[in-house]
Length: 100
Image (cartoon, rainbow, N blue to C red; front, side, top):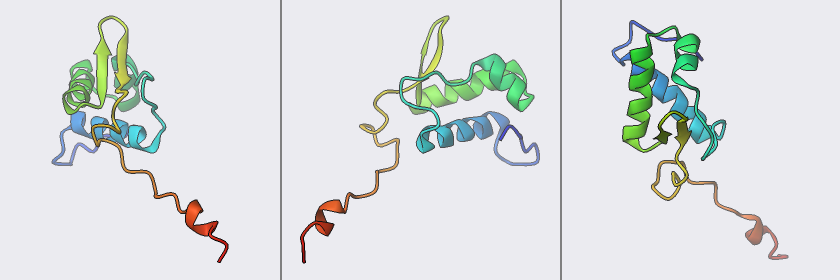
């Protein structure tokens, strides 16, 4: 985490966004919680502020975050409803309780 592959065909802002999306999907970043600020992204990834800003804008455009002016960007609350989170595993506990 925190490493940009400048030899990759994937632009740095998309690499940052992909790591944040992975954190959202894994549950490390919960709905309604703040994502790292632009200055924190600059420090973590060693990129220009414009690159960090573009990564956040990409997440916003994809529906993963919403931004409140002068407050920050937060993980969207309705990700599961919009199919942006993986489906939870099927609950098989009822089948195990059949007593057969």
